[in-house]
Length: 447
Image 1 (cartoon, rainbow, N blue to C red):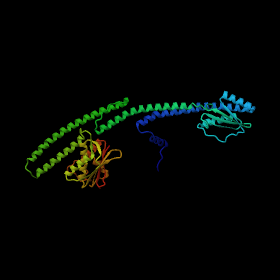
Image 2: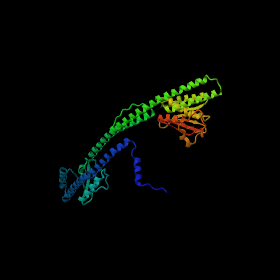
Image 3: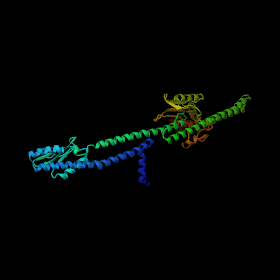
């Protein structure tokens, strides 16, 4: 039975899914959201406590004037009195009065954009006028039409909308919105400038991880500059360590090859025989093992990153395999470019191809692009393959998996480890899987 999660946790997870994930989005939300809430609260308070109060007073004043005009006319419903009332209302109250002899009140009216004004005016007229009345605030842009029943007809009173509600309220809204947009724009520019410094630091760190030498100067907030200076110091220490290791390994390689060369010359001057041939084979295997050890320890060395045509690099690997008597099928688009260290990357692909050639009769290399703009290379073979639960073990240094694949007499179990190390040094990776040919598939991905 599944126990339901507490609703606060579910609410928090839903809230996290809706919030931005980037630093820029979250910073903007932290600044803009309080400003927006404050503006909404101010606007609500203004309209509820001030605007509606002002409108209520205005509608009550107009309703009082309408009631006064109605009562005055009813006391003396003569043309002379009506004329005098029209002149006084126009001069003193700013109201236009028309008597419609035998008129009746309209049945409906147009809906106004400001519903609150209609409610306030209807309430005020209902309190001041005893008989039937009708009004319309939406027919004319600048006027309000009010009609009340009197003996023998209807009095039509036209008043300016300034008499009904505060028409300057939209100016307050305009300036409030303009201030919000201005402050938000300034916040966006400020936050973007701060986030850009962090993005450049992340880009420099990623480029350094790929081995690129990117010029980077600390800038931005104090904490960001402090992190950037710490990164540059770390970069200098790592680079110094890599340089020292490269020099040391070059010296070790030279020192080890010197006695091996003397031994090979001594064997060349020795009369041939079965024991001499066996010693030469052991000597060749020792040289191969030393090359593997040094290649694994050296990594990518100081080779520069270049833009290469992937099809040409793969074709070179195919030609090298053909010299060894192995035909490798190639399916690579000619226009694919990649930013790699050519020597190191070629060695990684050569190790993967050699691993496939050593255990299969047919090998195929297929290269293409991914949907994200990266590069993907598949090396397929029809060999016995590897159990999926041992894919990770295959990348362990000095691991040979004799139980799964036939032992490579010349290998020391570093081919896949070197290939993955080179791929990850370029920001990509090497993974293993089942091949469509029935054996093992090694997939190299590059960003």
